[in-house]
Length: 118
Image 1 (cartoon, rainbow, N blue to C red):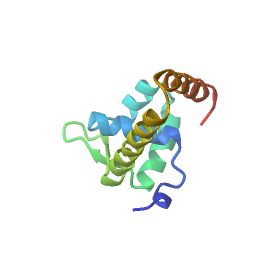
Image 2 (image 1 turned 180 degrees about the horizontal axis):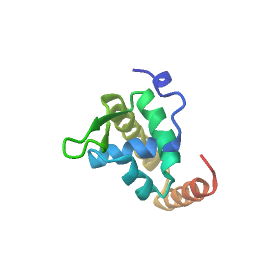
Image 3 (image 1 turned 135 degrees about the vertical axis):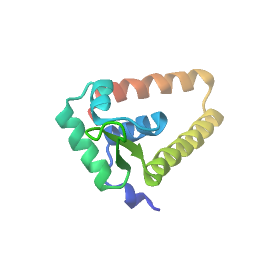
Image 4 (image 1 turned 90 degrees about the horizontal axis):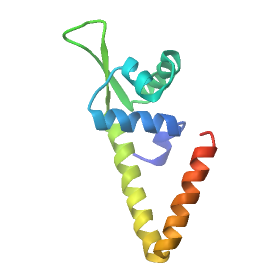
């Protein structure tokens, strides 16, 4: 699997896959509530993730109207690879920057991430 396998994946897509991966499974309705996003908006995001094999969908045995979303192996790989990269960068930055510089960097990155629309 290479970087091109994740073309078009946005921060929102990543966050949805990560959330579902951590929970094990969830429904589109629950995602919409937990993320504060409308049901139609979640449906569009989920459609992309299903089409790109980052999520799979399975029908509930108890209620046939309910479909659960789960991270696929490809979706799990996206999250795991991302976390591995993040840990590597953090370790490298820790070796280069002082504690104060790391705190400043974290502050600035958080500021940027809360102000930009991904």
